[in-house]
Image (cartoon, rainbow over all chains, first blue to last red; front, side):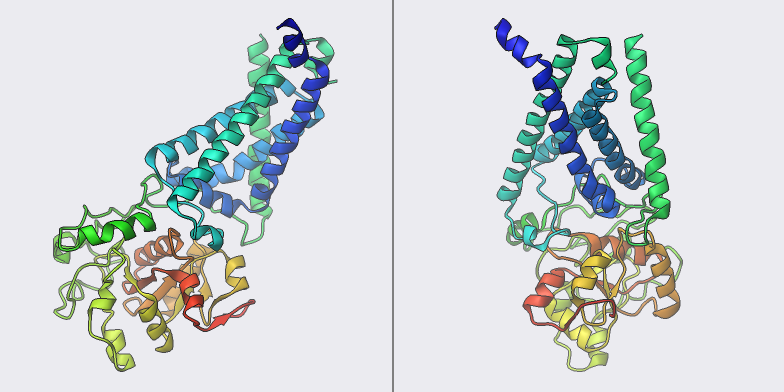
Length: 160
Length: 259
């Protein structure tokens, strides 16, 4: 048990997970940064935000994701960035969870015509897979935070 | 102390994200720019999916329709199937066009409201058109509601009669292929209001105007129809099945930057 804790908290693992998490967030943010109207459309389809906040969220969220991702890769403010990434993931999971609870598979037909042919069951299945993926990324966040706490030194605190 | 430092770091990241986002939006091209704040009626209302509407349609036949949808800012409550339009009609937002169409004897049903049952559409229940004049008379102005949904068959007839078509999808999708003659007016791009204003001077508000998007659960055409209705267009017809259906039917398609 102690060796598992030591391995989970090792600097070697934490650094790699942190970089992988950062790269995943950068990769997820770039298409949204490149095309904010599509992301606004996606946010609108969740039917959770008031109309006045849809565009603002579509503009700010991708840049926020991107900055957190870059911070994780570079090891700058890594604990804060990991916590923020965890918060974002929790919000995404909650949003998809609300959609799943509503049984609302209303999505995507406007972006890609091929998706419009998917059945409701297929779309709900896809959404469950996204929740699983995000849960995996949340586990990565937990590892980074655990590793940072386990191996906390002044140099690591500042990502040097 | 540590928490304070983390909160300060988080606030800094957020502030930088806000500044960079606003700067990049101000520098973005017309198609990538977003209007602030957004203006989306019914942003928190969960619509019934096309599949659900299709599956529930037979059981609704002959029974009163579900409660009418409310359609957002400054937009009137829509009449339900069994309800007279005059019971729920509100004046058009800009006061154009009276309620003549709503009480028109030629209007056999007040159906076809948003979202309409898949069949029969109001256009489909009236007699087939023989000439352009007859065809256009089948689609009278409807100042009491933002739009009426039409089938692909009617869309083809209206296209042949020279009725203007508007493509509510993204301009990039329009460039890849669109109904011949259709103009791009994407509700997701920052210049949508300017384009709608330009149409006011160009098109006759009460005359039919067809809008379409990708069909299925896509709502872009409905969102655009609501915007057009708010600007005084009382003859907006939503081509329910949209561009994929148009292609399937072998309708005239253009691509590139010309309508």
